[in-house]
Image (tube, rainbow, N blue to C red):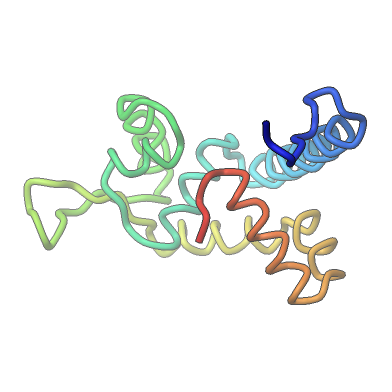
Length: 147
């Protein structure tokens, strides 16, 4: 028999933490949707544009990051491309693969989106670097990304 006890799923502390995480996620999504709306984008369009601002990506990698089907990503990329925010270009490493990449306007829009998301940044700014590193580690551990 193990001497370590695991918290019950209905343990009051566990329930409170789950509720707090849910509240943080809900507020973040609400602010993200509002920021996207100010740019006449859906939340999914804004998220993809933000991903592409980091680096151009093939559709399959975007789909994995978004946890959706590649056909859904194709439709979103089509709409972003029609607005002049994204372009498709050949992958220099494999010309059979098309990368989605932000246009200059798309990169500017992604920066504006990122800069308008105060909810997540402001509370984190109140934490010390050590506290933010601890929080990052705990979140990674919760997601099974121990590193």
